[in-house]
Image (cartoon, rainbow, N blue to C red; front, top):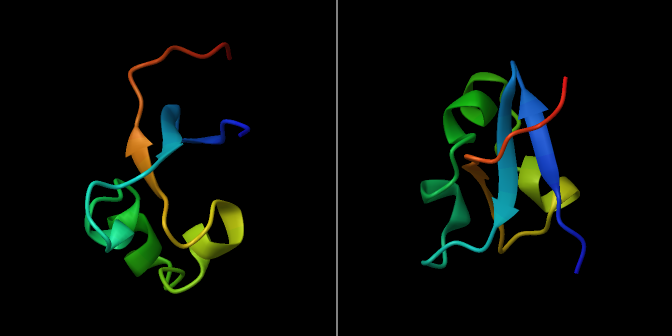
Length: 62
């Protein structure tokens, strides 16, 4: 399976499988999605309903 990452304001977030069924509760982008009123479809469209984004400690090149 392909790895998916997103970079927002210089912070990298990797797609991950949550430990529990409700992925929004574990997603590190949940606050961003709620503020932007995108929470109902963001992850579903990008990575699927049973995945979430977790803040990464991996480095990326600017």
